[in-house]
Image (cartoon, rainbow, N blue to C red; front, side, top):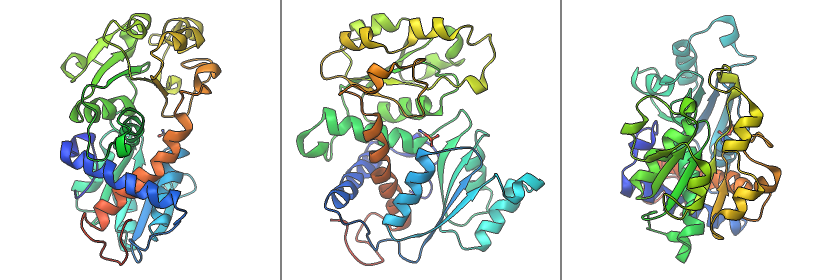
Length: 326
Ligand code: CP
């Protein structure tokens, strides 16, 4: 793996390798081995042109736990606000010796441009580009699903074949949904997207998943018993009233509330990538329920991002900078 730009960069074997390495990383954290020497002397740049809490902090924690040097760049307060281009920003970071650049950008495709324009010599990781993709979110979601749904030795070496996941809400604007549909399909899971017609993208019928406008029917099991329901944030900042006429109506038809929660199979997980709009796409009862993995997903994000940085920078075999993973 040279870069991680899309969930489609990972075939089944590569995706399972990331999840298996993430499991080893999580094991080191559970054993309170807080730092591995694996990436000592390497520099990871977090290049964030859009706000983030979970992704930025977890990439920083992941890089530091692998002993990398970390440079945090936020567009706010940088020369971007004086009009500096992505190219000149990238060349500046390259001059500082970035081995990996983790980029979040409001424009779909910006990480691909960074990876392929020759401005950056190191690895590029897409940390969310516009409405396009967020591959490490999909990986941490798959990691969380596997740990719960394929519990034998944490599902090591296993995919998610036969598991059924509903992804619900604002699919149109969701890079999380796009990456999850791709990765879950690669891992053998069945996905059903549930959304109002105005919040499903043109061409969704070509995606490797089913679609429905009826959350109650999906919760009742009309597409088969669900193993997980993944709620999406309603991205109101990207919408007009034509997409989203009423919060109350949206919540009534597409929100996960206590009544719908009670109708899910007992083992079904409640997921959300965060940040959540409590009371809109998910009720507090659902978000805080014992079957909610929202906080666990954040913790798993550190292990998964450690695995991604490790595989990009140190390779899949014995670490080159000393030490082993386990
Ligand atoms: N899930 C996610 O990408 O969250 P942040 O925007 O806080 O990084």
